[in-house]
Length: 276
Length: 319
Image (tube, rainbow over all chains, first blue to last red; front, side, top):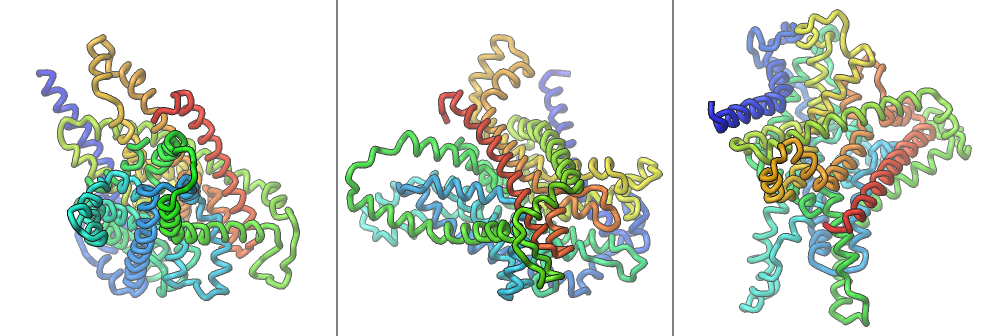
């Protein structure tokens, strides 16, 4: 066998291992979710009989549909606010000279490292008196602790790459500042902003500890704590099938985003690091 | 969380140190630029300060008081008593030990696997898109969901396939060491891709000609990896380790899901804080735990930054 063919087979083997290792736990959840409720605890890798009962059971219950609505709404609003505020700051950091630039970047880095458990207690106490406990804003506000620093970092890395001279060139050619911004800069900045929004959304969608501490009912509880609180149909049945089905539902948007935007997500995550 | 950040940050710091002109009299233009910059940064800065600065100060204040929501009338200033209570209890030290072991083991495993994955992403002769896409699935998946995948696979009570396949007599999620193992596997699976992506950025900076030259001189792939790739990537590796260590130390979601129910054999400091604050509703004692967790994170960060700083200046501050 030639060296080239050996290399080819070597890589093929390595890639199969990586793909299987990366996807196996998800496939296991998928298999569990498709088992019929009676055989869900049988310990078999592949369902004996396929059934969609687990999916219909979670969509029949208000606890999951409400949690899904809350998760989508809260993650989207957090993303929009964080990206809007961070775009302004990142523009200043990438384009303007001012004292305090280092302070802003350093502070956001420090805040990104912040352990959430250090502030859930005070927030819980404050939210009860302010009436923010178990509400959407009650989660959106603490989400700023991790969404804003992330957005500022990724966006300022992207904004540094934009050829800003084009804006002046457009103005020389007779465009107004607003036109130059809208027609030249905006299209160049849009991909970075979009990528940042995806990353921020993934983080907001992932949160568990804030949601577990600061919400309690279908009013604002998001999916991760809701899944954890699933109980069986009766007290004698385990909620395994329902948990697996709900887990698959919340994983679908992530898989879709990853399939569509793999390049962008990788670029976003490595953008800052490449500068080092 | 927080990606790529320090690298960008340190580059920024270096640029600011070397490149800033000595201040002369400020022109109007400079003044206007600064004003605009501050106005643009203000909203983000104010929000970040308000959502973290105020609560952490409040946590410090609470930790110095007897404050139990079940007995609100008995609140009083008690100085450092809460800290004395926490630090003299076995539970804190046991949970700290669990957290440190979990952090050290999972981050080491992630570094090795992450490096392998990064090399595969960097050098694969075909199918790079496929590896990257599948690696992003664990990265993007909700941590609680991932933890459930592992719990439902390992738990005998939940009908997992692992005990069935391995013919285990006992439930792996009852004994401490096997719960550890499951938690480490779950963490490593979830976060190795993130580590790999950070390392990938560093790999891209290693010039190919160096490898070619070494190859001509007869260096093996193994030698080239240790003598060329690793030294050049040292800052990237340290940054990636910093991120992952701080993140791993805060571990909550995975352990909470794995230890749900009767199993309390594995508990981390974040969980101790959460349980004291929100299950026992003892805000004073819980806040003391929270502040201590915060101090631990600061110490880890300071240690890394010192190490990183020493490394960067050794290299002559290049970037």
